[in-house]
Every structure is written in C-alpha cells, then in structure tokens.
Length: 262
Image (tube, rainbow, N blue to C red; front, side, top):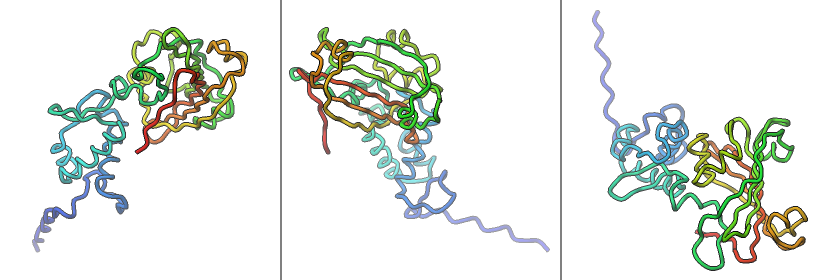
C-alpha cells in the first residue's frame, strides 16, 4: 500500500530563530552570544584572516538562519572586544595589530608630556630553552617543555624606559629569532599574527612596585635601587589559551601607567 510522504516542516517563526550550526543540544545562552561564538570559531579557524572583510550582516543572517539584528549585536560585541573593526561605508573587517588604534592597546605606558607613541626597540637576546616551572604553569605547558625567551628594551628619545622579559611556548613560534624580531617594522604582536598565526585577544596584568637590581639598573640607566613599576602580563589567544608571559620593568620617572575604566 502506498505511503503518503511526510509533510514538510513549517518554516521557523521569527521568534524561534536558531543558528544553523548550533542544532545539537539545548541552548543556554542568548542567541546573539551563540552567533558570536560561531563567528569566533571562524576567526580562530582562519576563515577570515586579519585585515580581511567578513561577510555582510545580511549574508551572515542567511548563513546562520537568524535575524540581521541578532548578527549585528554579535558583531557589536566582537568590535568592542577588538576582534572586529567596523569601517563606515566599507563593511566589517577582522582586526589586526597593525591597526593604529589597536597595535599599542596592550602597552599602557605613556609619557608625562605629549601623546602615547611607539618606542624604539632593542632586542638583547632570543633563545629556546626548557621552560622554568613558573613559566610552564602560566603557559599551560608540561614540565620541561621548550619555550622561547625574548629580552628587549624599549626606549624613547634615546633613553631606555622598559625592560621586557617575554616567554612564549616554543611550538607555535618555531623559527623566531632576535634577527627576525629586529627586522620586523611593526609591533611584535603584529609579527606574531602575520607570520606565526597567533593573535593576542586579551591580557591580564599584575602590577607592583619594585627596586632596580644591579643588572636592571645598567640596562635601564637608572641608579641601583631606583623605584620601578613591575608589570607581569599573561596574554591569551582564541579559546582563552595562554600564549605569552611578559614581565616588564618600567621606569616611570617621566612616564605613567594609563588605564581606562568603563
């Protein structure tokens, strides 16, 4: 006996929209947050590279089967998080550390006089070694895993202001050398992004006052025992994975640490 074909499912009502790629399991977050997570997944997977335009809100709404307003809200949050950049009349682009208003967003040291600007870099060394225990813990490495240590100074008007000790997991930064760092004209995070595919998304810092030891005093051209600002920063990439531990010593004699609170 012939069997009637199943009836087609009715189209989803406007109030019951749900992203196409999030069908499995119940949703416990607002819809725009689900779309935001899907966009971040595409960014992490390299579907859209830094500096490239992403599809329009309308195209993304069709792709995820949601309203354009839901997509817009997700993109607004990603722009606030500095992952995307809206450009009037041109569309929305993947943020890059080469952007003038983004490249120095993690460097909070500003001169007492004049606007914040980039500083001249001098790399002291760049070497691979076994990660010390505290570094391994911070970077979620196993004991004895290889890491890259970079030491550099940052100077303004010929005077060193910052001494940085930077630790990176070795695997994502294969081939990183002091020469390569010195030759790159843009910010260090721009190099990590374009040549190693590692983008710094967020960072957390610990700040305390310290006194300059003998070795630091020589490099920063200050008296031994001079007051310095110690800034320890742990930077994360997509998936909240830690990828950089930076320990900076700042001479704040003619500079200050700036921050914006919202």
